Image 1 (cartoon, rainbow, N blue to C red):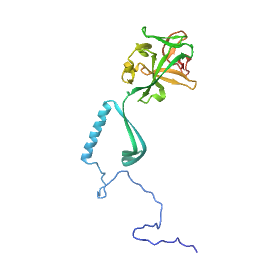
Image 2: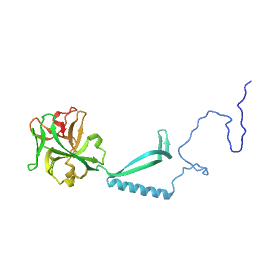
Image 3: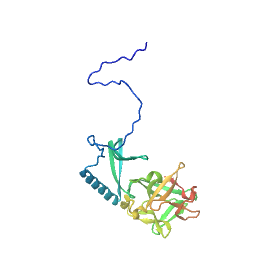
Image 4: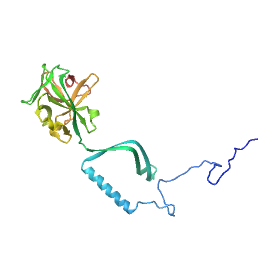
Amino acid sequence: MKTSPKQTSLTEDTLQPVSKEPTLLSFSWEMTREDDPKGTVVEPQEEEKETGNIEEDLCQAKTEENEMFVVEMTKTSISLVRGRGCDATGCTFNDIIMVAESSTVTLVPRGGGSFRQEKLSNVLIENLATRQYLRGICSERIVYASPNPEKITIYYYKSSGFRRGSSGMPVVLNLTDSNCFLMCCKQADRVLLKVETCEKQRLKQISKSDESTLSFVFYMKGDSARRRRFESALYSGWFINVCNTDTVGVATLDGHTVDQSFLFIIQK
């Protein structure tokens, strides 16, 4: 004889399942009041609407100032509070709440940011193709290649922007023991590499919106063979290049293969 499961005694504050049945439920994301017989959608109060408009105006003003916030959050939970506009294509969610254990908010000018000087090293920069070293004559504002090495000080910078990882380390190249630096300038449709004097204090922190100092910044990127190339931070796609002669300038890369005239070895 089949025995039924043992039944436990019920009290007023306990619930016990007694049966089950399969069914299909259909419901809407729209919320209604229990005492509203017509099922009217609950709308925000007038005061809430006005506050919302003020918040939108404030956000718009910040956008017009060309600024953005970067928010870093740890151990974050996300909750959906309310949704509207559900149809066959899906729902439009209006209110989402994020709660984090801690957060950091950083204000970064959109399209801007800055480079802050971090460290330096005195090196020799040798071109891989010609086996000649970078040199400069400050009085004549020229850069040239020579078999005789010359010390160049590389100033390394920390960036507040997002480009460092993909484009390389931002650096400034200085002729050691001088106020002369390598920089890029544009004439018509050409970009030229020159030597220019600049006070070192002025380059302690460089704004990405200041072209006069950004022209001294290069993105240095290396490979597994420790070969480097230097791309102008101001003129994207232009790299320091040494031709088969002693001419040093900047040029664009053709194709996917990197010509050795764009590659340099750093010797300490």
